Image 1 (cartoon, rainbow, N blue to C red):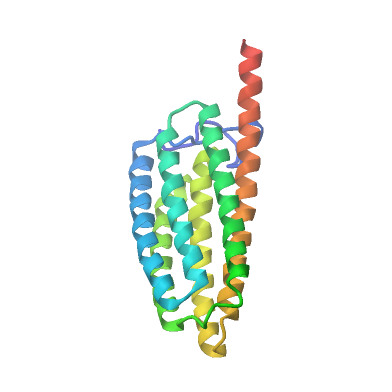
Image 2: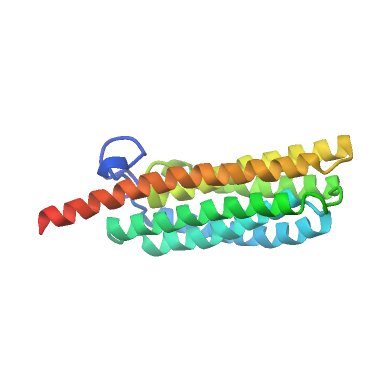
Length: 220
């Protein structure tokens, strides 16, 4: 079946053991739906983050935007050569890493000027975002094991759901403490999550790129 992994082995794909590469009509349809969900939630959290004065919500909105763009790249390179797909995954991993650095830097920069966020708005939008990301995770669950291009989509969706739970927890703590500290801590934790996942994506994509490069040289 087209939806199944084309080779045996786990989902790492490192060392050239490439599994599912996204060449499935059902996967494409689900990815389009996830792209639409992420694009809509970027707009919702962008406005909500500004209204609530929440750095964590603004960081999550940026994540939604990044996912919308990178999922589009994932869709565009489906069916391409391993070299093209691994190069796209390298680009996405680097983008995710830079996003993490930006979130960390902007959070630290604004530390002394932020007012206490509005906890009810944070919680409500965080719950809405969590629902959207859980739907995305369920849509992509059966495709979590694959090459670096496919796996990067899964990792981003999983990270988003984790981040939304953290935003909701921060909203509760902001309400209890009356301080912006929980919001700032969650924003920094999300930045760390971005960079950790980016490292994993970059490692797998680089291994696949090197394998394809060595294979092309040996075949020539």
